[in-house]
Image (cartoon, rainbow, N blue to C red):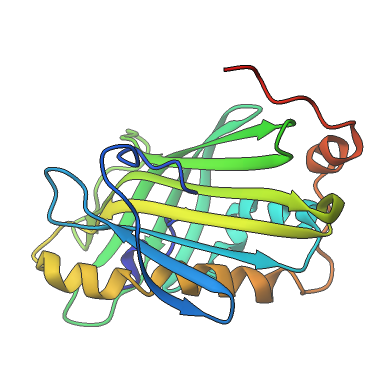
Length: 225
């Protein structure tokens, strides 16, 4: 049921209901911390992972932002495609998740929005499901739903190391009971961050120029509140 491992899945501490509930730490493993949170009105929990990766932030961003690369580091993703680019920082994506029999495969259509914060030297990718006529529901698959997902990368040591926050709240739909989904999804934050750790070490990954420019600029002061 690697249904949500894409959602990128799992992604930063700024989830939609973060102010209404608290993240509960439920596991730690080799420096990675995993959290869960109840979501009002939903039987499905939100999950979050955080950890540190010893790799250039500009390369790590390249890996996460590269849609066709997702099957190489995200569990059970069969294909990942860009449907179309909406703007410089927004695009629509399609993901097909392969599941074992007797479960039906899942797929997702979602919008990705990228934002940068020069005051904190961070980059965020936000995901949420949308409908698009170019990707109608296929009879052999179930259309799952991402309520929200975030990947937030924050530069450490001038961008040579990265703090990764990943959180998501998603629903695979279909007949799978909520308790089973929750049991499965709790491992996904760890799998996603560990997948990133391995993927970013592969040769030939080019550093993202936008991130490199952000890191090269003098740090902007945080806005007054």
